[in-house]
Length: 445
Ligand code: FDA
Image (cartoon, rainbow, N blue to C red; front, side):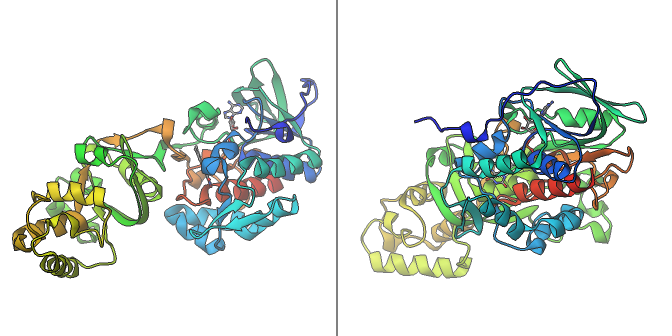
C-alpha cells in the first residue's frame, strides 16, 4: 500500500512579487524547514521555496524510509565525528544538540528509540512521522512555503537580494541557502546552490560523493553478493596523494611521512553486492576513496576477524585441522567466518577444500591467515553521486561565520546544511548537522 503523505503536504500559495520578504530560504530539506520556522517565530516575514511538490524528500527516503534522525551522543561526539570540520559546528550544536533534536520530534508526538549502534529512529520506523513533526512545527511558525518553485538565480544589488524562480522574481533582505548537495539528484538536489554561492563570491571546495558504495570487478567478491558480515575492520591501502605529488616517500619532510601504512581504517558491518561492497563500514570509508586523485590505484583491505591476532588465528586453524584429521579441510574455518566466504578464501589461498585437514601445510595455513586478516580487493571506483548519501565539499567553511551561519563576504547571505563543506559519518550525524546549522541560521537571518 502506498504511504499516506497528506500529513506533509502544504496548501498551494500565490506569491506576490511586489512585497519584499525579510527572509527567503531556498530548499525545504532538514536545514530549510528548521531555519524557516525559527526565522518566522522571531517575527521575520519568511518564505521557504522548494523545487519538489512536497518538502523533505530526503527525510522521507532516509534510513531505508525509517529516518535515522541523529546519534545517541552529546555535542562532543558529533564534533569528533566531523573531524577537521567539527570545530565549525560548536555554536550550532550548543544551540541544538542531539538530545534537543530528539526532544523537538518527541514534543510533536513522535516517540523515538535508540538502536544498538546508537542510531536514533522514530518508534514507528516511519520517516514520514519525523517529516510530519517538522512540517507541523513549520505550519505553526507562520512562515510561508511555496513548492514546485525551482530557484534559478540569486542576485544581490547591494541592498536587497533578488531570487529568481521558474516564473517569479522575488525580493528579500536576507537569503538563506539550504539547497543541499548533489547526491541522489533525483531528489531535487542537483548542486544548484554552489553556483549561486560562487556567483556571490564564495569559494566552493570541490565536491565529491561520500557515504557511497565502492565498486570492484574482482569475481570472488561479486560471487559473494548478498552476504553480510556484521563486524569487520576495513582499511584503505595505497599511496597518499602527498607522497605521489612529492615523487616518492623519500622526498617528503619528516613531518609529512606516513604514520600508518593505511590511508584510513574503520570498523563495522559490510555487505557484499553485485557491484562490490556496501554497508556502513564501506560507506564511512568511501570518502577516502573519492578524495584520492587515483581511486583505482587503491585496495580495500578486509580483516574478517578483527579481534583475533594473526598468530592466534594460525594456531587456532592448526588445532582445528588436527581435530578434523582425515576430514576435508573445507569445514575448519566455520568457527570464524561464514561458509560462503570460507570457500572463496580457500580458493584465493590456493587450498583445495577437499584435501585432508591434517595435511594442510604450514605455508598454506599462512596463506589462509593472510586472506582472512588481510584480504585485498582492488577498487574500480564508487557508485558516484547517484548513490551517495551525502556530498563532501561545498561552500568553504572559512568564509562562513560559524556563530551565525552568515557569509563573511556578503551581509544578509546565509548558508546551512549540506550545501556547506560538511559531511559526517553514517549514523544520523548528517541530519544532526543540517538541523543544528539550520536552527542557528534561522536565529540570525
Ligand atoms: P536536503 O538535501 O535535505 O534538502 C535540500 C532541498 O533543497 C531539497 O528539498 C531540494 O529539492 C531543494 N532544492 C535544491 N535545489 C533547489 C532549487 N534550485 N530551488 C528550490 N529548491 C531546491 N542522514 C542521516 O543523518 N540519517 C539518515 O538516515 C540518512 N539517510 C540517507 C539516505 C539516503 C538515501 C540519502 C540520499 C541521504 C541520507 N542521509 C541521512 C543524508 C541526509 O539526507 C542529508 O544529510 C540531509 O538531507 C541534508 O539536509 P539539507 O537540508 O542540507 O539538504
